[in-house]
Length: 381
Image 1 (cartoon, rainbow, N blue to C red):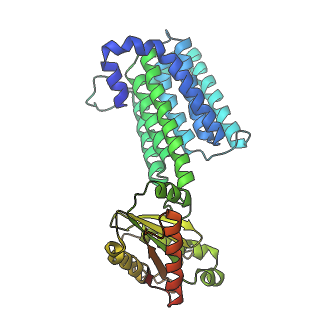
Image 2: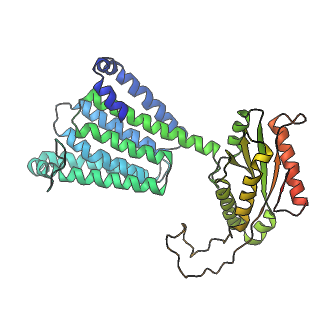
Image 3: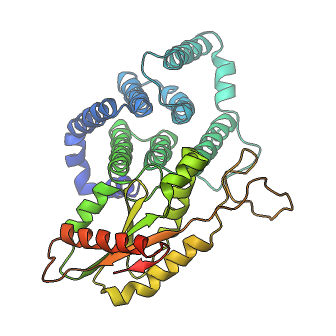
């Protein structure tokens, strides 16, 4: 949005932007469309279709005064509906109903404009019962749609704080501004380009998170660890962590409870200090990398992490346990008993005998094995 305002104010650039804007729009649209299909992001493809349809209507009927207010009303409504839709395949019943709703909306607008033009205009331009600090006051219907759409987009982002959900919210903002401010078509296209670029950024960031972040625990995964190891210098320390008796724990309490344990431990590791970065190595194993730190520099921090896991007091989530920690403590007792969860830690650093990260990991693994032999719930190096 800031980029769009800057380009609008930069008068010497306006002509150059106008000349190349259709090519840029077509290019970024095709790239985002193909990537959306490739990654099966059907909501994104629907949003692109809405943007292309809106821009096409403005280009085909530039002299129709009703086009801008109608699109200012329907575009945020449909973008919000697209945002709230689940990711379904294109041939599903839900997507067929969504496509049918667009056709019904078009027919309804045509019918109202043809047979009830006065009532339609009165409804469309019904003023607000109060004044906003704006030069141009929106109608009550447009204000209601914009407010509702914005609140729904914010609630959706809070419920699913993912890059693509954030991109949908900013797309909603970027596409409404030019309609409300009655921009000319070239500036409308500029803001639509910025909206598509926002969607593309959200798509790429989501794909990056899927590739480099562990889906279960939410911390970076093995691939992210491998990339991090390539960027390390000659001085660092590396800790390998393993949940004690995890297999027996899994067999006794089930895989669902095992997943909860992994999440709990990952949450403890996410608080690591001393410049450390936690990764899920695989299974019940985790890795913490401390760039520019010697072993003696991180002993206190690793001990804190070990004690934090051991004293957290893990309670398996039951059906009546809320998904989030309540803000107020209640006297209601859970039927589940706290379970003891501990971790063993092995630490290593580069030396003359081990120069490569793989050798350091191997040394940390050996130290981890030694910690388990000595009774677990301890640190060895």
